[in-house]
Image 1 (cartoon, one colour):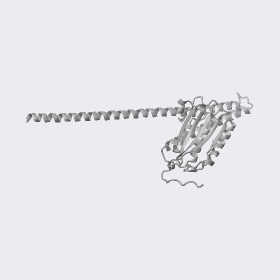
Image 2: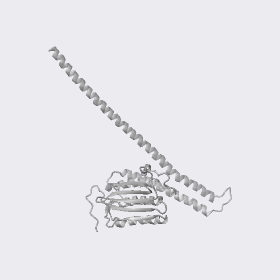
Image 3: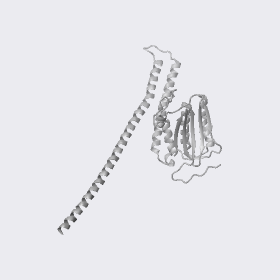
Image 4: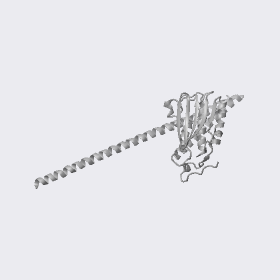
Length: 304
């Protein structure tokens, strides 16, 4: 009996030791997994902190540049208008006009930058919300693209003509209406067409094309004469990013246009894709034919 008791005790101790070993391994695995998770979270927080610092640095620079130009213009304007060492000056209308134009342009640039920053912040807050909740100033409605797209394209066609560019509008017959946010869609197309006019060389083509599918609509804005390098294409939607040497005419901008486009497209529950090669650059906007509306049934079809 004594031997049997010893054997039974040894077996129980061995089982307990095995259980302790298994619990120890399990605990160690959990600790390692949790540590790895915390490391990832720390790395993500560090990345977000770097992004925040980069963003603040860039915003500070972008806000400072127009102010510096305005300050310089004010000094130059003062040198033209104010007496020098008590001697009256004869105003030079050409210089006065030039300096006032600089002030006006830089004021508009500063206002546009602040407005874009505010809109971008608002769109980021609204990201993920349903359209009915996300845009209190506008509700989705049926949009007759056959009539609407030519109205959007007309001012840009005129702008292209003034720049000696060619403009093409392709709308298939029988293009159906879509249920969407017209104001948001207009802002997206206006930004894409504005960029096309800005960066397309004289003599080259700008086109706006629409193609309808069973469950979605594709709208393409294409321009020729320009290629965005492949390594730059992934960054064009970043805030303040500008493709190096893509603006040889130094026409400027806030650097927020395409970042706003991406956020607006998200609000439309769509997607946007860039393809640029062989002197052809094309932005393809894909939209649902019927924008989902939270808390409402399927929208009534438009009257024909």
